Image (cartoon, rainbow, N blue to C red; front, side, top):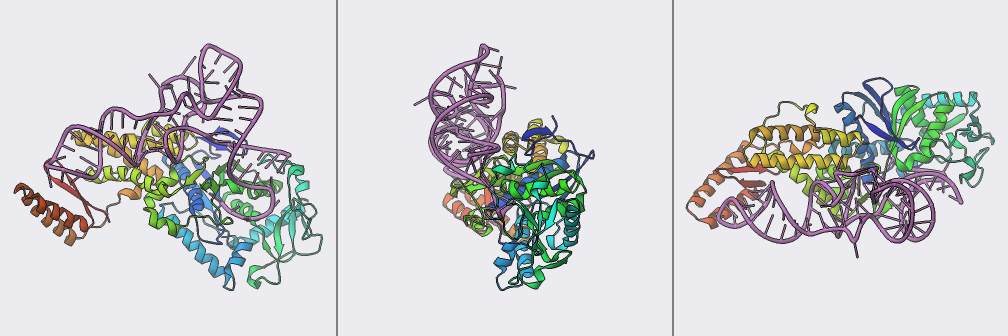
Length: 459
RNA sequence: GGUGGAGUGGCUGAGCGGCCCAAAGCAACAGCCUGCAAAGCUGUCAACCCACGGGUUCAAAUCCCGUCUCCACCUCCA
């Protein structure tokens, strides 16, 4: 079975075939850098990271674009009296740090909206020329997309114009309540630096035109997959689609939307102010646990955050980590995706059923532990190879990175272990336990085996 | 008003016509192992048949109809 993806435009599972065999181009809506990331942003980035890794594991090269919206109403507002550009970069950095910590691969391209103003102007000019956009009727530099000129408007979200609520008033020189801004005229209370010279006057781009312009710049008139959070489906993605198609481009072949992170059943969002931030999380568990938890529901299912969620994920992850730690002497020369269990592959191909894939991972870990206890080196090697291939696909690789152990610590622990062994042989268990406590205080976990004691550094 | 989605064990969460007397993880209990632990393994625990009521089918958690509850979106949001 080959990969099937749920296309949210056609609302069905479709076999995924790249437009160019062996190569996949994807565009993912990145954040508006208005405030620090919360779990919802991380989930979105993670979903597409796993999709990308899976495509790579199944012999595709992938070009991935994830934009940064660095000019926007909220960026200007939240910057307050500060330089908004500096503010936006600072927020962007907090996203980058979180992505890095979560082991999310760098996108191929990470364009900023402010770097592509000229492309947006070009696209807007074209839309005006084709009769799908117009300069504001009030003579300002506002430019709007003319939704009434595009009969397919609403095709992505299966809506009809007459059922949409739209702007309650026709304002800023709009012709119709559903028309949306391609460019917004400079406002006197906004910094001069937040406006660019355009054929229509000083203005800054609207949100939707950015993605259309940048997708075209990097991926051309058509590409394979467009991704983003479910809450961006409308209006953002609907508008992107309308702009690009009205300008004559095919645009995305597949539309994917990840479901949201909820808390107590309600959407986690910046506007509701109920976001669980990266800072909150650092207390709750390791980054590995957070990544694991964010992977633990299929991407189209809501994922509800609770107090115990990260703790449970940590425990589940520790099983995998524990297996890899106790088998560090089993050398796997290189990751071989051919070793992936069929059940794992099937799960991933079924619209990225990561929870199903994790179930397979745990099955193999158990089999590996059994082989370990039975000293069945052949089966153990199989298991280790499979586990390592799977965690590469899932991006959980950092769980087994060997911590750096200083020679000093090494010597210290071994010395104490010898003493403890002597105490045990002398049946002085009180002393043995005391030494164990001393060793554990060094951040080391002991595992007594049949004829030796293994230890690992927690750091 | 419109458009989508969801309701599965104590918790998280897969399954979406037969392999389901429902995966996996967490939590809980017991056994093995251990000087005792930890880790690991094994078993148990578990879903009054998968919100409720009808129906289709040889066969339904899975399809259809109705009801209830919840969530998201309808121009700020990943």
